[in-house]
Length: 313
Length: 313
Image (tube, rainbow over all chains, first blue to last red; front, side, top):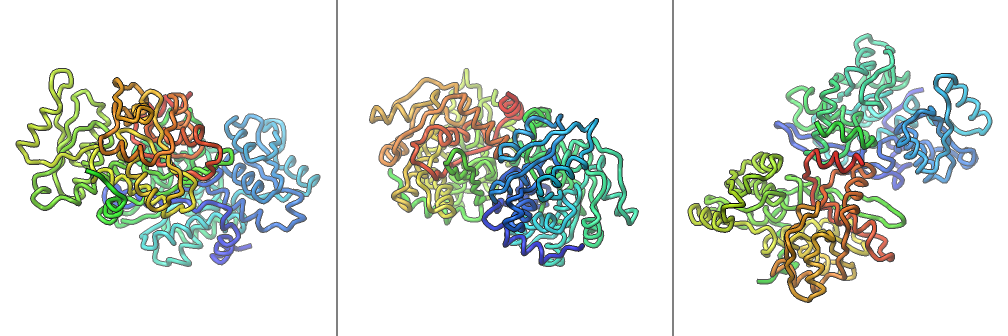
């Protein structure tokens, strides 16, 4: 399976009117203009609504009637739940029973059914398979599928439409779906725009994989950027990143926190740590000749206590 | 002196390219669509840049060479300082010597000179007059002048251009400059759109004045919405509000805090308490048949500790 820019354009048509065209907020820092593509202001709180909606809008009536499901305790769960709600389909989300209440409540607020499992005694894959077998629900993969990647790439397409004269675009890397979609559309529409990824130093699986020339797995990560903890890039996303990225910028935990603080107190946007990783890299880690950079700000869902703790330093 | 919609249109031409065209973010709550005009994302952190820029761009070269000044420890200071910086003029800002450091630093970051005074032993008016006499600087009034009002009204003009089919528009009331400019432009361009103001219960001077049919003064207010503590509407702003407002919605301190929390955690926008007053009113205090309401979100400058305290409830 491969994926191309044409699929991003098809996704953009499919999801039109069902996801927000999020604003681009400019902020100038030390001679560099950052154009923040604000997916933290997206419905459901992150870009994950795009991939989820691309999936739901691709299903036929019979599949919609059987519903969809996913495994996630984070933004993918909320994105799939919200996409299913707007398609009139049932969403089932498998979550560890010790998932934070705020994430459970957020997903439930979009009408999804939550199926809890014990991550110490139960096998999540087996549970997902059993539910899918019983219900016929379509499993929506979080990153490693053409429909997911194409949906996520629509954010960068909107960014290019709004700000055509960029030097570079940067996006954070979890499994790589957002950045792979970004790479495809930027390379197709604006071949001279440089492409960068951003990862936490503590979750550098894609950086390591690029060095090695093959997909590498890292141990479970404890980075504050909880959306970027996937231990290994995808089989489908990695070759795309490998073909198109100039480099990956690694940022420290302190740089991520400082970016959250700066976004909150100076720009007045609430951005979760995973979303602030690309901003941290754009502020401190890009080549000096990058003067106008499009920054995909992936999401804003975070707990009040965490935000309070980060800003009150 | 009077002020008209034509002056808002002139201001819009004058400030074009010098202030951000801020995004409008939609959020749907209980069957009502809020269209948030995000002046918290404005350069300098509030709508005050608009009035300040309209002033600076109206001065001739001789006046620009003498500089501008204002008295404020808040958003007006930062707005005037930023407007002066982009016009290449010197700004002097008179502040109480016990003003919070964050506000002093913010104003200074735009290149303004800060002149401190002791609010217990010195007369602020006398200090302003002395500086103006000595330097020839133009004093930029915070709300009660046609150029100020016209500049502030440009936010509503942009809102109407972006969302033409609103039922109502609401804005917060300090001295009334923002709302007066809003009233003029909305009534001229969209005569059927209903107009509302929002005030804290603890700073209800304009609400009282509307009841009385004349300008009323209240004692110093302790509302958390520190930008709305002016004790009395302006001589120029009040008749405009009187002519055009359907009513003023009063909100409690708890409702203001709840609106800041909701904006932060659900919408992912950082809005200072003064800016959240219009949102609090739009969420809870408008007539039930208002289904699509434009909400001027006036600013986002607040201290980290205050934001942390409000969200961490």
